[in-house]
Image (cartoon, rainbow, N blue to C red; front, side, top):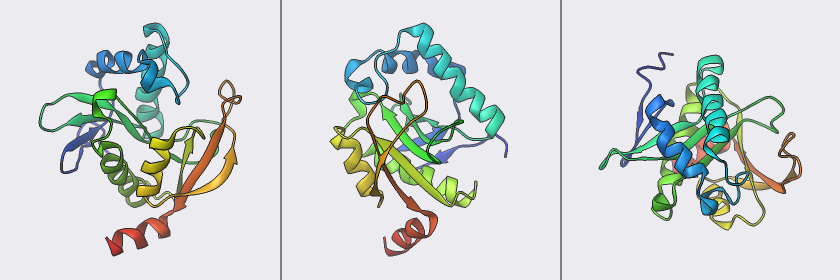
Length: 182
């Protein structure tokens, strides 16, 4: 897979691998307490930089990671979403994290649906999970709109092991059946 040309388009979004120019938006998103409330807490720029490079490194080493989300109409960087499966993770994740201005517009669902097609059709994943903080009702609604169901309580690896998390998910076959009905 040629990562330089990898680009997934939806009606309103462009999903593509992480690029250096995304860091300004990334750092701003990681500094927003509302955005970071359920995904590990606020990060200063030097910590956000490490996470940013982890995402870029996952693309280089694993051949996948969360996509940068670009709004087609404006070219604005809106966040990151898609596949994530670091060492010790409880399963192959499709996750999402968007800047506050992108909330409530259906972007997380739209982009995550395209990312799920990608992991099932291109990467051959058999299932996906969404680790979600029990108090994060917005993310639960996204997971539900995607057709995922609550599988139960879960645990993330250190240093996130103290955070409460529910595991939502579905299999490739469940996703394909849902897509056929849509």
